[in-house]
Amino acid sequence: MSEFMQPLELLIEQFRRLPGVGRKSAIRMAFGVVDMTDEEAERFFSQMADAKSRIHSCAVCGNLSEGELCPICADVKRDPSVICVVEDPKALLAIERVKQYTGVFHVLGGTISPMDGRGPDDIAIPQLLHRIREGHVTEVIVATNPTLNGETTAMYLSKLLKPLGVRVTRLASGIPVGGDLDYADEMTLLSAMDGRKEIG
Image (cartoon, rainbow, N blue to C red; front, top):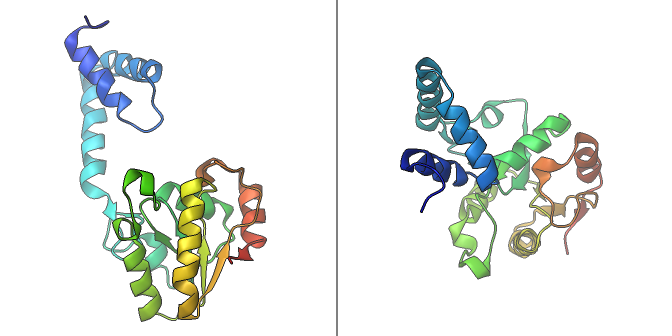
C-alpha cells in the first residue's frame, strides 16, 4: 500500500525521475507543488512547458539553445580553431563561468560506455569529426569528467583525432577523480584549463 494518496504518489514519482533527486527530496517538491495557489501552480507548469518547447540543441555544437545556433556558436568573437569537448551542457556552463576560455564547444551528449551498450556512434563523435574536417581546427580540448567512462572517451578521441593533425589536450589534474565538472569551482577549472596537457 502506498504511503500517500495516488495523485501525490504519482507526482512524487515524477520528481524522482529528475537527476539526483531522491525520494525525500521528491516528497518535499511534491508537497511544495500541492501547497501552491492555483495561480502559482498554473505559472509553474506553464513555464515548465514553455522551457521544454522552446529549448533545443544547437545545430552546430549540441549546446542548449532557443535559436538554430546557441549564443556561443553565434558569437563571431569566439575562436573556432579551438574546440572544447564536454559531456553535457552543464559542463559547458561550468567552463563558461570561468570567463577565460575563448574557443567554442562540442557537446557529446554522454560518454562511451560499453557496460551500457553506448559506443562512439551513440554520442556526437561523428558530428565532431565533421566539424574538424570542415573547419580549421588546431586544438581539441577533451573536458570529459575524470570518471572511467570519461577517461575511456578521452583516450578514444585522442587516437581518433591525432591522425587528422589536430592537437588533442586534456584538462590538467585538479578535478577530483570521479567528479563532475559542473561541481568544480572557478579557480579549479581555470587551473585545469591553463595546465592542460596533450593526451598520449
